[in-house]
Length: 543
Ligand SMILES: Cc1cc2nc3c(=O)[nH]c(=O)nc-3n(C[C@H](O)[C@H](O)[C@H](O)COP(=O)(O)OP(=O)(O)OC[C@H]3O[C@@H](n4cnc5c(N)ncnc54)[C@H](O)[C@@H]3O)c2cc1C
Ligand SMILES: *[C@@H]1O[C@H](CO)[C@@H](O)[C@H](O)[C@H]1NC(C)=O
Ligand SMILES: *[C@@H]1O[C@H](CO)[C@@H](O)[C@H](O)[C@H]1NC(C)=O
Ligand SMILES: *[C@@H]1O[C@H](CO)[C@@H](O)[C@H](O)[C@H]1NC(C)=O
Ligand SMILES: *[C@@H]1O[C@H](CO)[C@@H](O)[C@H](O)[C@H]1NC(C)=O
Ligand SMILES: *[C@@H]1O[C@H](CO)[C@@H](O)[C@H](O)[C@H]1NC(C)=O
Ligand SMILES: *[C@@H]1O[C@H](CO)[C@@H](O)[C@H](O)[C@H]1NC(C)=O
Ligand SMILES: *[C@@H]1O[C@H](CO)[C@@H](O)[C@H](O)[C@H]1NC(C)=O
Ligand SMILES: *[C@@H]1O[C@H](CO)[C@@H](O)[C@H](O)[C@H]1NC(C)=O
Ligand SMILES: *[C@@H]1O[C@H](CO)[C@@H](O)[C@H](O)[C@H]1NC(C)=O
Image (tube, rainbow, N blue to C red; front, side, top):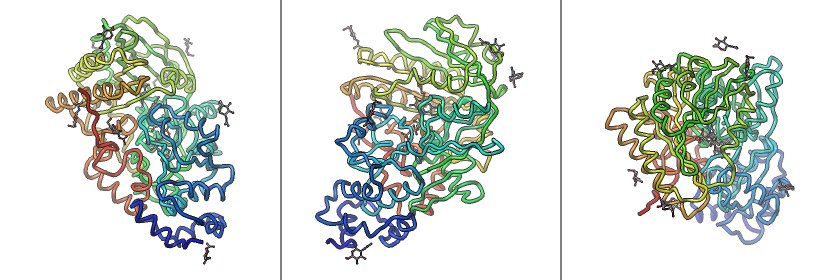
């Protein structure tokens, strides 16, 4: 039998991954979690392959039989196919663990520390780039089994397991004419959107914020979480709210996957019935009118907090189209705030009264699974010239990949209104570094879909060029706001430094306090880290 201590030391040296808490501390917490740690010895038998995590996988399997998926099983293949983007689907973990409780998440995390095995955490699996919530040769922790939805007796708060997808929560709450500030596409997970931010243009879980369709009136999803149940690096499960751990609470609201694994969110509910909602589709001859309407909406958005607008420019089957997605948080037909959109002639108009889950299902249809996907973002001050520049640059650049199979490029703009930034100041503020003094802002979401890996370099070059040119233009014209929205950012963008030096440093302090061995930085390498570097530092090149 191998000596455990030697083994750990050997692992840490060979992998250089983590200075974990001591073996004794880990064992103590595992014991507190109810595990018979005497069993550990039996798995540490035989030679260790330090570059793979098979030993960790078999150990978890020992403690939690039938909860581990391994590579040759049909259920494993099903699981990898459950991601939204192709780039995440092709990542092959050593195994997948499906916990059903916070304590099980804690044990898996502690064992990953013990074995120095890199891990990833998946909620709804909608982050676009490879390795965001899945990990090559590592342990992928899949939160789908954390699916409770419980409404408080007074109906003011709903407690949701972090493996839920938004539509299930909306369906549940609809019976009570209630809603929560969550994702706009039905299958987005609560985990990613709420930790990433949740920007909801009037109503998605790994965003430091999360935008919803109700964000003007109530702020972003992260601003409406009253309590987080979190598994810390030590394996301890804590309730994080403004009273218990104000600093950690602040950091979770936008800080991404850097502070712990959230197992449960308690969200404030809002009264919500039908929404007047749908899309207006315009031919390219009305581009200028659509720009005007969107600009004026930006100026006036804060005057009608029930309104939400997502303005899309897309290229499909040889044509540029503009699409205004409009949502109003009650059944007012054609509210005045939307007049400038409704007067423009359309090729299609789908406005109707819909429930929130119907609206999110509608968005789902335009976001099919299994394609290659890339999101890029930036933030600008509201200006008509800026919008026109974005549209022109998008059209000029996007056309370069016109022949790529399955190609659907989109330029999507939303307003971060002063109403939203005012709402963000509640409950002690969030980590995003946005404030009403910035005025109304334009949030850029470049969202491109395509089929073939052979087109990656060209398309990434197009995305990088549009982003670079827009930022350069904005800087020249004093329209640049340094803020990157995590949920829309690419792997080539460093999100957390964009929250401002003070916020960034504060996030690092919170991390040092609650994760002294930096487990979430070293052992969970995917997605946006507390680093001045973006997740991928090799910028795509194309000639
Ligand atoms: C079609 C589509 C529509 C979208 N619409 C919106 C929208 O309306 N508003 C908006 O704000 N955003 C939107 N987004 C962005 C979305 O919020 C992010 O992609 C988000 O990360 C998805 O969350 P997820 O749980 O599905 O993702 P996942 O890929 O499962 O997770 C994303 C990241 O969060 C981490 N994470 C997940 N759960 C937890 C947890 N419980 N604890 C700690 N870390 C966790 C993961 O490790 C990963 O790094 C949309 C994305 C798509 C693809
Ligand atoms: C593992 O085995 C060693 C040597 O046999 C023993 O001293 C130790 O107590 C065992 N550990 C556990 C957790 O049972
Ligand atoms: C895989 O998914 C298919 C389709 O959803 C389902 O019918 C099948 O039962 C799944 N297989 C396993 C082993 O989970
Ligand atoms: C939407 O609801 C309002 C208020 O109930 C009603 O007046 C209107 O006719 C409905 N419109 C449609 C298209 O269903
Ligand atoms: C919808 O909300 C607006 C703004 O708050 C209000 O004026 C209007 O009466 C509401 N209409 C309905 C049908 O609830
Ligand atoms: C509509 O556009 C006009 C300018 O054409 C502007 O004056 C008005 O404020 C806009 N209305 C709204 C509600 O945005
Ligand atoms: C797309 O293909 C058509 C037909 O082969 C060709 O004429 C056109 O130049 C191509 N466009 C681009 C951008 O490669
Ligand atoms: C970005 O735009 C695309 C294209 O319209 C849209 O489907 C997607 O939901 C938007 N992303 C987010 C995170 O809102
Ligand atoms: C965009 O700017 C970055 C940073 O300056 C640079 O590294 C990159 O090459 C540029 N990309 C394109 C496509 O121009
Ligand atoms: C980073 O991006 C480059 C350029 O697209 C790519 O070749 C490389 O594989 C990426 N690296 C990782 C780790 O994904």
